[in-house]
Image (cartoon, rainbow, N blue to C red; front, top):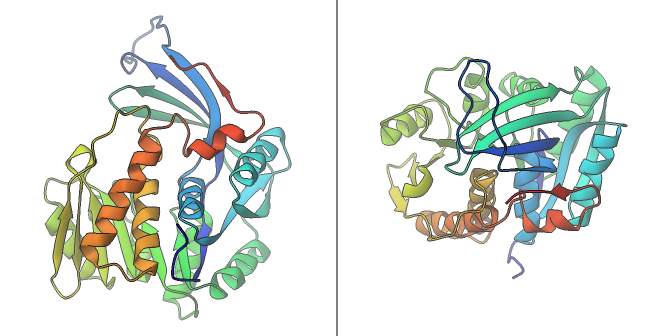
Length: 297
């Protein structure tokens, strides 16, 4: 369904090519043999996930990511292109790659097999220009993102920043500039037993809105005026939990572009999370891409 808004969104951050390995339990830290339940080579990366789901909601979105001129970079580009996502690739010696050990319960250990090279000043300049030409800039946790938010805090102009702090504990030093530069912040409750207190501590440092996902218990939101909202998770037969938070973020953002209130945005996020949870990929559209292989069972 087309959106009423014609806002342009830029998403800046990680896109990777991942090997997902499904186990009945995460390995214990002792030498042993263990049989995988299945494995899958597919698109990964928090920013790639957000861009896929924003595109699904008919948002005019471009992904800005460091990609190598290697096979993995070509696979990432093909997967995104097959889903209709516009990509601005920035040069890197290699494309990010992970091996993710996972369980059906959603537990995960991510092994970084390759990381992008350090971005040049020219790359940061180019990304900053691009993010100044849109209506909303989604800046995800990354070295490039860190450089961009430091410039914003130093006085650089640009579009309002939405950022995803993931498992923020309220004190992590790396997250601090992202939080202080942001207009809207998302997080999950993995590192807190007090999501309302965590969100308020975020708002105290500048953002106008904070959202915290609670996994199977849904999500909550708090704005600077003190308005609170909550939503239950939608029923779903979970195929894979990868990218559910990014899908929720995208659904919430897309609804906000149509002037939905807090409750409406949370409900839209919950609906979009189901799309990710129902697929073994970040988004069902990824299966159309060449190079995607599946042996999950």
